[in-house]
Image (cartoon, rainbow, N blue to C red; front, side):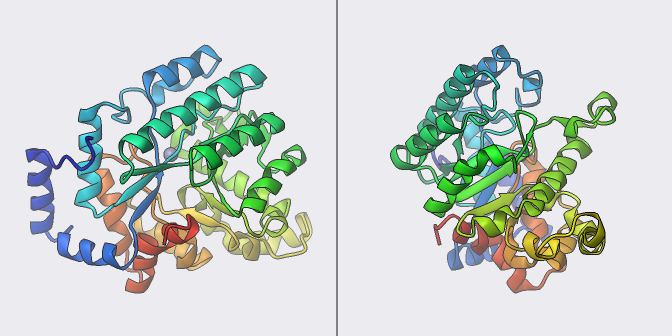
Length: 349
Ligand SMILES: [Zn+2]
């Protein structure tokens, strides 16, 4: 078992210098963790084998996931666990996106979903105190997605499911997916939604090398609005939907949504009220104004701690956790985000 095998000397030195600089104090973080459970709800793991499979099925962007330190090797795990422990993070919830098995070819989708879930089942069984996982599902193939969901939740004991903001270039609110939402709602489980890397299918995103810098948060924004416009959070009230990256630009346009939707797309409920029926991960690349806007808009109860590991790795991982308590939020709000909300959403509190 490699879990918690400890810090490398370099990590210890780094944590020590951070503590000395007042950025990170083990005592403070430890005290918070004891009150709840510090869970990083947005983290990834991929192996070259899985990425090779996705590439062979037509995914063109697997390079974004390769050589990022998010594999299963012991050295990679030691680094990951050292960062988690230095920041009081007890557990990460693994998410296969943006390499979800949303392939048009049914056989490919089913095979990749099984491979993804078997991979994560192995990670969870090797490091059970460090990881739990979201189920990959072979949507847009609904019957097959329901079968794999059942296997992943009942046999593999995963803590929810994950899909991308666009599912094989369909909206997350595609009416054909209703049976999938019904089943998630029946189980009162979690659906984590993560960008796909499709640049919202705009000719002005990927050709300008903006797939991840702004394409991903634009995907988050559009996906959240599709859910709101379709009334999915109201239709499936037991389902807990967690959107990525503070909901993209949603906090910035919060009032605009209510004002403009009145004439552009009248809804039975104000969009900002529906938005508050969902949750959002805290990944904001350590930018305090973004976190404050999300807390001021959706409420501190709706933000769950996330890191987007390995994309916020190393010093960025420290920052992803620290900025929650260093952004000028009320201490009880910071504590909810750090130690309570994810555990509540996942039923691990
Ligand atoms: Zn991510």
